[in-house]
Length: 241
Length: 69
Picture 1: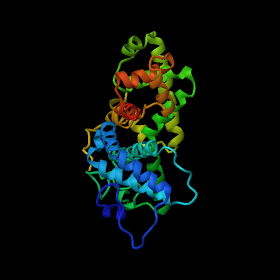
Picture 2: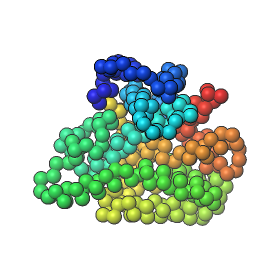
Picture 3: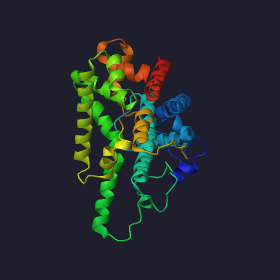
């Protein structure tokens, strides 16, 4: 992490060889950061308890990102730095969890890597060459195709579900489908869903069927090579309800 | 280093993505509208997501917002 490693505490940049006058945007950000750093830390731990041990690292990332933004030419001004910081830490946290998701998919699909067969470092970029499996036989073109295929696999689940939510939210008539499918993925049976949503069971079955069809279609579109992801999805013993 | 949850099957991953990665979180705009009108019928899906499923991400957003006000 280079520069980040030299940061003694969150909110302090390493000393530079020359004196630099802080811009008004930077001063404004630094003031807000001092005020909201503790709240951001608490927010991260509440929202992403899994990342509790990485909170300081995440805050450093966002702090440096904000400073770079302040110093960059032509960036639109940030009106609400507090809101910007919260959104930024949320995105960074989800990015880290997605790297893990990608790694887990590779593990589940039997694509163990030479350098990370049994452990995962969330701070390591997921597309680094060290995370690629060692492939002794295929040529460069095959390897590129394989890498692209795995990249698509890795982003599928959380992104497809998020896209499904946006699809449902675009029209009020689809919101029942979103709720029913979320209930199903969280473990409720169609009968329980029908009772909770005050719907006839047949309607719930239809909603779940349409949701699964949408998800599968989206996966087919995103993964034209019929990836292991689809194979896993179709396996009866591992189908996510 | 993150402490990993048990993820032995695809189903485990799905549950993890839904419960911890916010895969079913509403858009920020709808979530904000829900907080102002939590009983409105058009936010029934969010009521389930927040009040019954108790999504930690949305609840943390809410806590942050109330602190600011």
